[in-house]
Length: 406
Ligand SMILES: Nc1ncnc2c1ncn2[C@@H]1O[C@H](COP(=O)(O)OP(=O)(O)O)[C@@H](O)[C@H]1O
Ligand SMILES: [Mg+2]
Image (tube, rainbow, N blue to C red; front, side, top):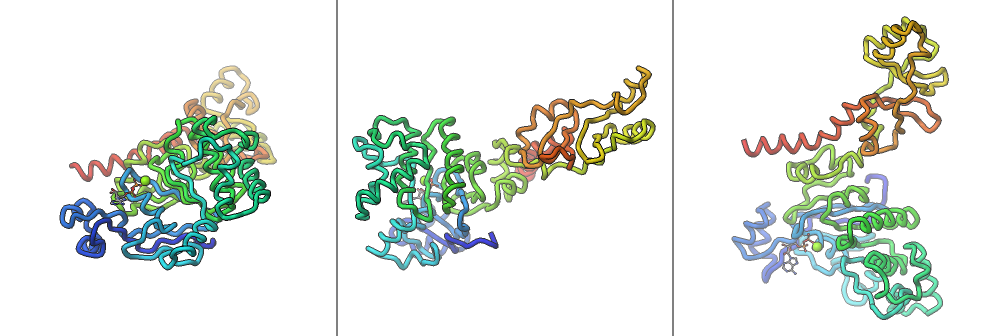
């Protein structure tokens, strides 16, 4: 993120758990020894090994990895719930390791809101008191904190429930109260550790959508932790994949999917509905259309050379498609004109769409016309290209497996 202000930065961070974190375990980790071997040789647990990443202002940065990979440890270095063994953690220009006591408390309260998987709400207090709780602790006066709490409840769509007890709400709604509580003090940073992981898949998707909608409004810097790659790719501007305390890859969802850095990432990615994040414009090719005013013989020639051609009017607007079989049909029927050969049932996509929305259209076997909002043809997608693109990451994973096991 070269052009944006960097709000969170971890630099070569190591975190070793055990009685002598800076002893032999640290030397081994520094030498790049795997966490399991460090544990065998020193009895210490590697939480983080040489972890570096930067998060830009307004970014949703997702750390993804299996259980035990170090995600929670990483997020806890940002609010200094953990000291680091070595390395630096910077948050908005502040070296977090230098903060202590009241200063640290104030920093956490003012800079960051936190949302966790099991959000500790007060079950018998009403929603608005739960949301305003942090502000009360900060001694914000009642009127002001209620205004702020109502504003946060509006963001998460729970304003009408302000006076309900939280115990009356569903799991998804309680998690929204948790989110509202984090938003109430209007912090620059949101730290979300597996915030949606306990929710049912459907509710979870809704929460992801809502978080993204809220983010469009509030532009926070969000560090979001999940063990679910689908969730990571769905909401992350960038995704950081961790394994055994080490960062394996950092990239945009597209990069993770199309250029997995290691076989480990590729294997993860195999399970993902990758078409969802690949855009039409990344896969489409020049359309090379013919004009609807072209004479029939010319059309016949170019179609027999290429199999089919999209047709545009002189404003560049796509008016249909001509295939070899259309040409043959009109010749048989004795009406050899372009207008009788054109078919208008061509599937149309816009360049901003994602490939997963085109499964059905690709299945028709016809090329897909890529048109801008004014209907002008800007490219074409061949159904085989769509299907190939969707198979690419799988092929990468296969290649990796062959390399390793053969
Ligand atoms: N307080 C602790 N003491 C000892 N080991 C810990 C502690 N916290 C985490 N760990 C270990 O550090 C590693 C990373 O844990 P964690 O960051 O919680 O993983 P994740 O959140 O990705 O599931 C794990 O091996 C875990 O057992
Ligand atoms: Mg965790």
